[in-house]
Length: 240
Image (cartoon, rainbow, N blue to C red; front, side, top):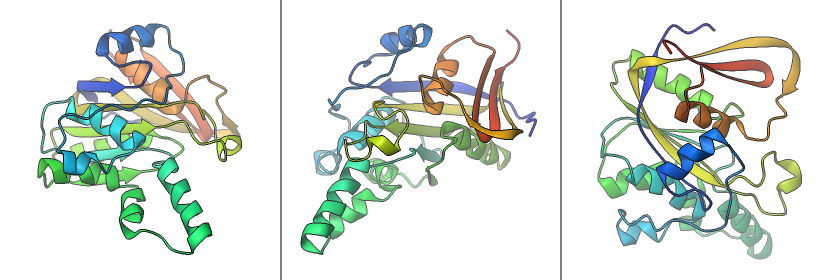
């Protein structure tokens, strides 16, 4: 696909234990490393009754969302593994007791985090939740579709956390722990395209798909390419 649809970045926010301010993230974009750490933000903008339901991934994700201006735009939540810590606890509970807490289960589904956000904000926005090898590239494709339907802004929330020891052997980029939120608009100097590859492959980059793309958004680079399976994705910036 050679997309002619352009988009722009209106606002962004990001959080990791090792990178907490915009200034730190801008420095990171010039000299990237794996963001990680076990701390979680306070999400002070959220009502306590809802905030207490969050674990670390949700706290990171919503810290970034609450750092951006209020909006009634569609929200796309993007996470490959989602609440892996909560899901592991549920599996242990099921194995040990043969039962699950309905509340814990409801908070483990993939759209629970953005749904808590809309509940707390009393919003009626369209919410999508994506788990994809292509990560934020898939979310941007969804955003372009929403722009084609007339939306003027789309908020994408991306979050991943370091996985537990039980899962590490099955996961790439198992140490990454971060979240970022980006508000995209249907006019700007960027475009996204993808093309097929004859051979199956995965880039041996030190950063995941999501962080490679985010670094591009924060930089002045003209191109960010990333191969996943038989697909190569390309973020381009025009007019520089």
